[in-house]
Image (cartoon, rainbow, N blue to C red; front, side, top):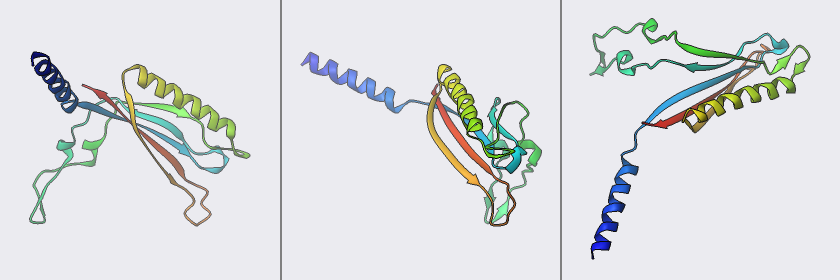
Length: 150
């Protein structure tokens, strides 16, 4: 009976620990240019300062916006890392060397985040490419969501 009770208490304490886990989240964004001739800008961007979303949030009641004033400049941060990577296209077209180079840089970033205790939680990607007009412009964006127990 004592063993059963002890096991039950241990399971209950272990279960509470699993339920009560809190995480800190962080995004890393990779933007790769799809501009012919290698004229675009490609970067990995990593915000290095926290932002309080509540300071930027306005509420509506009965369709009317509250009196709080939020400026676009309030949403900007100046503390971030910007890692240069190569464009998908070179002067002669699609560059597999550039793609492989970007993969190596991003692998280095992912390994660094992992070594710092961050877990890659989810990955989101999207493409904005030629919009039907022959504009020859676009981006490929990948957002990496990391989390860490706090």
